[in-house]
Image 1 (spheres, one colour):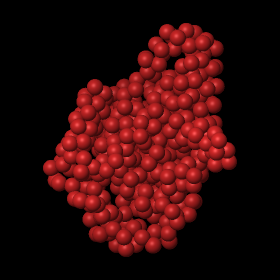
Image 2 (cartoon, one colour):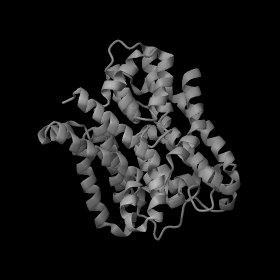
Image 3 (cartoon, rainbow, N blue to C red):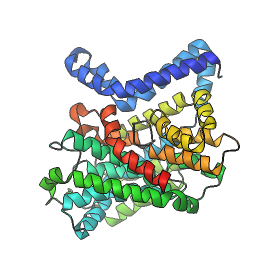
Image 4 (cartoon, rainbow, N blue to C red):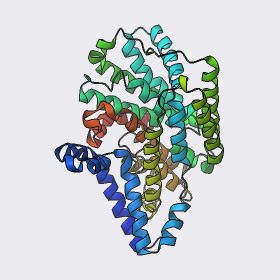
Length: 420
């Protein structure tokens, strides 16, 4: 249903959504100044709501410009597998049995490191967990890392600059940390089949470079955070729980999480496992904390909105991708990723016929390196925002603060993928 008029409208609404993302922090401030309209302003200040809200606007405008049938046909033609998968992974990975197990493992690892406990745990959360994203997928890694780091870094008393630095490092490291395999990072997944990139290729061409950048970013960030972390030096990573979760319950959760990851491209199958998980969690509710249903739904709403809005941006994105030489394509993808989902960017590149191997590498390298610059740059980022924003002033994460915090780690990632 693409026409010049609809293309322009879609681009304008996409730009409005992008500007809204950067202005979301201001809506939160306005909600305190105008308590009479605090509810609406608070809603508009939720970063996770932004793209879903403007996607609804787009569908309504399409109904007026074309017809209601065409608008519904377009909305139903989009692929919502990724939003559904992120929703399911967030809920299962954020459950008490999974988190308790990960915390225990991290606490054991932290005890072996020649660092104060809080510093060791922070390094593990910023380095090891993002690299695990290559096995358990990036959304699962983001969920686990965010919940692990929240009481350590994203807490009262931690300087605001330190929080944004840690947030930028986390987002960048998750974006590149999933490139050791061919199935875990959304921008890689979009091209792996078309370009016949397997996990061996990813490890040889991307993985070791990404791992080096992840370790450097995490080490620098942990060193810069050392002073505020000293207050937690004696605290264990494994927070005391009301009761230890039985091994059998943990195993069921881990098996269900593994099943969801393996069936990530089959929504009917992984949603069936999710329903089984909900039933099991209710049956053994004494071993559960409150499930992250609300947070996961907001993230899924955000990503679904991005799918709807992004579906009509091909007319201006694809010509840019196809016209650039490899080096220009690297920096172009690095910049474009900040204003559009990096998976959408690489998908458009996979549609360009006759791309050289160098151009393919540069496109994906730029897309994953820039995945931490904004909330919309990489699919797992909204999950991190949803789980960590309570640790920021007014419960809102500034898009400008995230951008500044991610510049340094992005430069390290870009240098590793470009120069090595």
